[in-house]
Length: 402
Image (cartoon, rainbow, N blue to C red; front, top):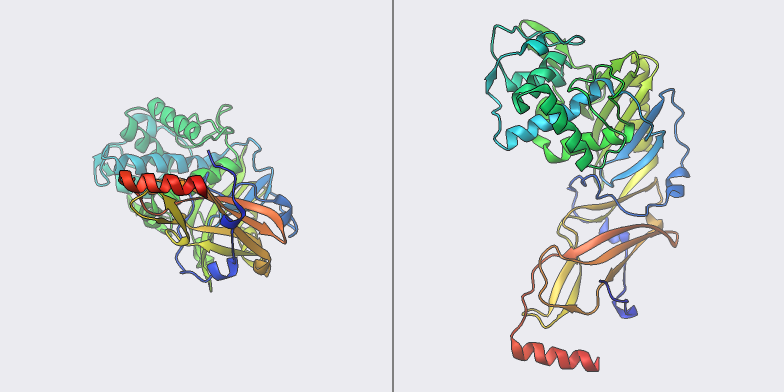
């Protein structure tokens, strides 16, 4: 339990000075975005007007949604479903359940699946690696079905894995009925939920993301198909993600882009669902990316492991411990408003050993023009073991008269 804070331990830090620290910042995990972000701050920048039924633009560097429209609306996800299929396949490879170069045969159920295909020959074994290219680049339903049965032994078992993973991530608007996204009344998701899946792929499997999602074309069985994320060909900052279409879902697209700025790289993710045409989903995704980059700045509050303060420790083998965050901290603000951001570090007092690395010991409170904007947890960046008897006794006495 955090005790009441003594005024002399409330440290006011200048975010402008912190913003000058190092250019490399890790992508925050979903769920680790700042708490209590003031929506009215972001709403002060007019959002674009799109024809898509639902959409959002997420700044992955800060973890903030910059704008959205009906992002929690339940809708058919079409082939955006294959992002979850890809995630679980990447996880199975990492866990040693399957091998990337493992050769498998297409099951009859996959051969009979309709929709887009990578054109597997069921008589010829195919590698898991090729199946991933075929599913991600060519959006092959035959590839998705074959991967599902390779990972889980059956399609139904794999669908169970998909829904358990969605539940673990708190995706309340999502339920899967198959690994492909073909129409089914019980198969649905939302722009928000799909953004969480996309962020997990980029964060949890960055090498796999770079290997498959930025590939512009793939040839299998003497048939070459281009990546349906056509922004890969026209915007050099775009490095993936996925498209989808059914008559029920309309035209859908998730796009990720990474652009470099003087204070470091920024990654934006857009989700467009239910666009009226294939051209519209491309144009509206590009419009969201450019709008997010042009209208917002990321103020860098701390690099991973950067000490924001050194706090006194009582009854420990060391008398101080560094306070900071194990991940990057940043906040998105309207362009040019970085100087209006200020931070206050609040911590537990007194800090009494033992203290472990990563132990929660405070918060970084962020304000904009004096109004609360966000709050980030802060942790001990090192460990402080408990001191011997005499040191503990002396500090007990000092605390009693403090």
